[in-house]
Image 1 (cartoon, rainbow, N blue to C red):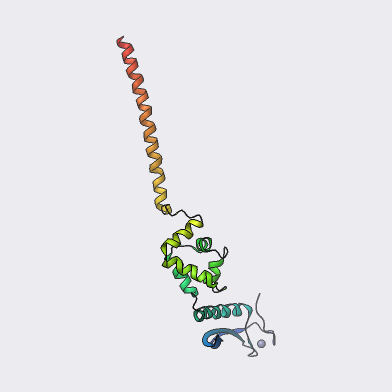
Image 2 (cartoon, rainbow, N blue to C red):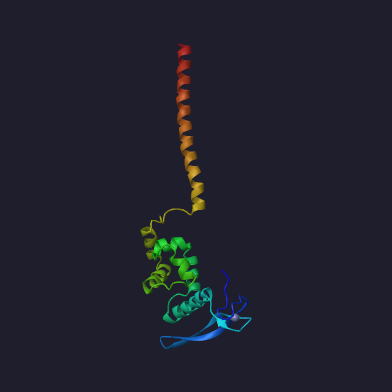
Length: 182
Ligand SMILES: [Zn+2]
């Protein structure tokens, strides 16, 4: 759906970005605010998708002021822990799409979630425990290594079976040889 000017009906807009000052808990911060200007009548408007993007920037600035991990820091932390967004949600909770929402600044993580993420990075034993609780087996090798182990194990079993089979045949041969002598 194309955005239209409510004043003149034109859909010819110019996107502008300007810094704007906001306040939170007595602290001021500046973020870039996106809006549109009608090229026909110069009316200024902020469309819903622009509001969404502006809100995300505001939320990220709030996090910074509140001492919470910002979107960028959450991505970095998750990468350090070598987790996908899905795995992070399984381990830390917050719902299936929690991490994509945190990382797009659509949702601000709770203080508890923020502490849990930091603790997972600073306290390795706790991170291992959390992974085990989520059903991730710590002893399991990475997928690529694990794939290589299985065929070798199968090959050893196959070798053992072949050897025992050969033994039976040789015993039978001996028996036949003995009967021939007899
Ligand atoms: Zn207009």
